[in-house]
Image (cartoon, rainbow, N blue to C red; front, side, top):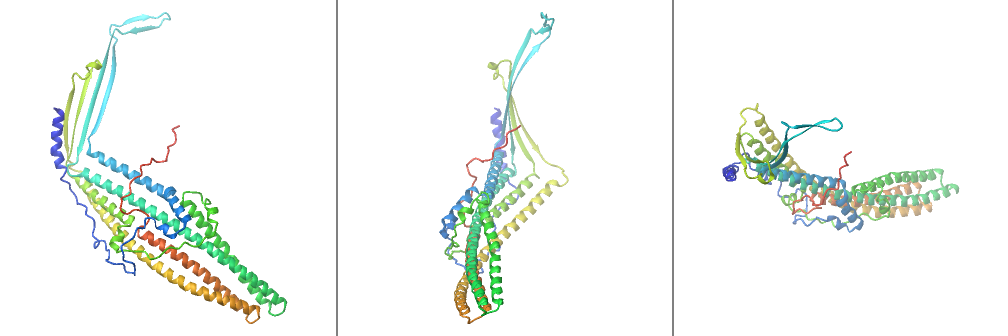
Length: 493
């Protein structure tokens, strides 16, 4: 009978729960976010291709292995996974509000009646009392309570937690693709520094030869010692650049080690073998802005944050209205376990509460949440516009790096021919050392310029992949992994 009455109370209350207060969240349109129909820079407007494993386009097995290792072992990624698990548990806790809370209790007691007890003196002189009457008592009980969300606060709390969970998934994807791009950038830097070291050492070999020739010519009385001093100064300047390049190379390799979850020096032996700067095709389909933004996890995370903020307004507004809680309890007592359930008593109750005066606290909370939603929308729009900026900047950087590489290739060919001619003419005494030194400096500059342009081209391409949201499956919402956490708490002392 009590159970039927409880259900009868829940039916009208459940229908009232559909009376949710507060704004209903609807995604903002492209126009409201300031998204243009086309990019302002020349870009390939074809539908965006699959970029989930963009690093394989560089056809560098070591780069691929490092990125795959970072996806599994990077500590920033591990933190993002933990935050995602935490958000998942928050969603579970919110969903639990749909269900009643049930608790149970059981007890046992034994009473001893000392009235009329016998007093006995033991052989050692101790006096003790032995009761003649005693009794057992058993009890069992249960309680059920349920807080009805008459104005949709429970549903909105679940929706807010779900949005936060999905946002944490997109945050995880953002950390993941940022880590992948950081690995690739540092790998390109390391290979670029290797190329610069090779350029410097090649120039040192030539400058050693020039210094020797200048010394012979001074000894022969053909030139003054000025040539020899200029040759010595030029060689020293080139040699001085080597330690700085080596330091930068060491830092890039150390960064690669940390990004893959290892000690800084873990990859030094593996990276020691000189390899060229990785190259990939630069014809990347960009698509139109509205479609491209859907591939960005940070944009989708900002949208989910806005959705959660809007739901918080409804939760706060529901607190302005009455709250209904219902519940019941059952209990039984007996002197023996066998008769414990012969007689059961119970009660059913309902409680309706309404805040009458709180000094404006609840309405202030509504206004606070409305301001929070406005800030979340501004952050969302800012993320959208920044994403468009990232894409356009990456496109321009890639195109300009490609043009610089083409011009530096021409400059290198011309500087190489000029250096060869100047070297031959100096040996033959047809030109002075200043002309030779200028030609050698131009050659080294052209080599380093071409190396830097190639590295910039690869870096810009990586940045474009990142700006387009490459590195994750954008057709799914990232969810918390099922694998247990590796953290083990310390044993209690």
